[in-house]
Image 1 (cartoon, rainbow, N blue to C red):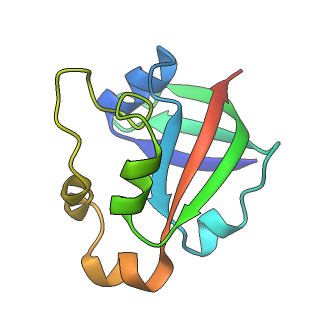
Image 2 (cartoon, rainbow, N blue to C red):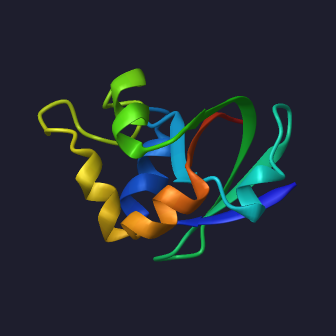
Image 3 (spheres, rainbow, N blue to C red):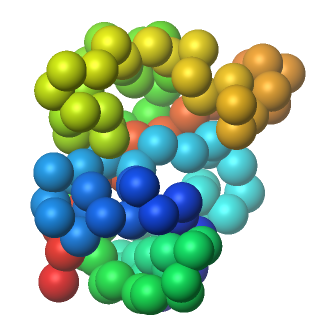
Length: 110
């Protein structure tokens, strides 16, 4: 079992099952996640929790490649938004992305 925190907007989209891919750095914590594992997501605004099953894991060298391979709604954008991999620089530095690579964790709400 793994625990991760999410901003409220992402948490709601996972709860509504529109966001089915959680994007993260492929760091030490994320490299221990396997298909079939459970992730407990916590909403940073109210500490609400949701349990999800990991159904697939996709590794990429960059968010640009990840964005090319997955539908923008599944990674957390609204249909009317433009998906831009540079948005991830708000969370991770370019150096961190180059060091670790990135991972798309496909999840299903339990």
